[in-house]
Picture (tube, rainbow, N blue to C red):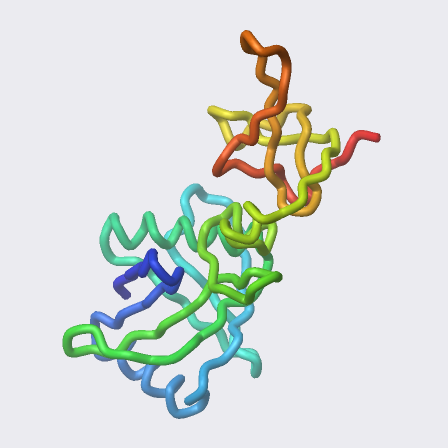
Length: 194
């Protein structure tokens, strides 16, 4: 399958590239014409980058989606990361057509405040879109936060437990203050330090 991302509305489209995939999408369209929630199944082995997405139907069968190009594989890895951090199901919104084959239109997560579709791993982890996190009335808590240059490394820092924004200590001519580190959030499942 080919993977397309619509950055304006955070919708991912999986487009068929052969007749077997076409049959699956047509069957899905007959059984679930108004869309469905598909449960995310985590990969059994950690063998490196995840380029195959496995989703479970409500009645037990599973759908495996594989990217075909490097671009597809990169987008599939982004979807994997967003689903692993967010933990939610994939919401199938509807079906469409890409060139001569069918496609599935999906949402990876939704904002808990405004119900807007979200796709970024950080937004999915906190279930909060960018505009809603900017409107947050921040409170400060000390805990483990992601390192600025290496997101996989955690360090002790100050963050907001409502939206996950990380605050940085800055020292300048005016004195000491806190800056918000834009685009980076604390891990949702952090061990908080009292």
